[in-house]
Image (cartoon, rainbow, N blue to C red; front, side, top):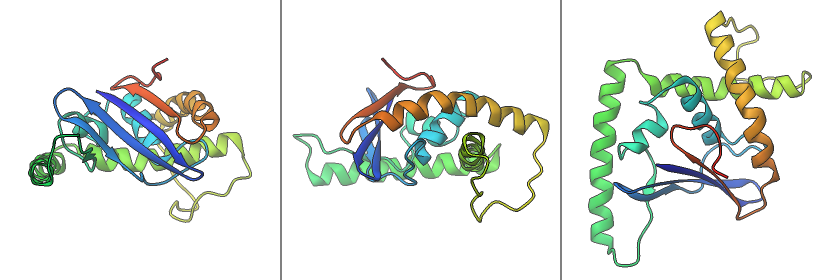
Length: 181
């Protein structure tokens, strides 16, 4: 599966999923634009680096997630609705399984937010953390090590993302956190 992050506007981006099984799907606009690390890119790096296979991109690989099918030339609206229903059912099953097991989706969400804050603070110690982070956050050594590892990877992809012009893309092959050349 290929995962592409496309800069679509001055402060907008989309996330595009392409694979042979489920076709081309996208989320446009995608949430949480950032000049260096958009929210979905933070999710992607967190999930790759920490081996989370039941979160955003692992689910997308299995046909779930919030990514909408991209209309292809010959497909009619009835077929598109049918595909969307099938995708919703798959996602509901994945969500039920995730909540009854290790809940990687919540973990990915928390770590994507924390990793972005951690990365920003590494580059600008005067940056104020967002209001949703308590004034004192206790992180155990494992979480701190994970954030450091993710932060190192974000250093590379953040500069690549920041250089993109509108219409340009950054593409990865899941679950590899190294961009495709």
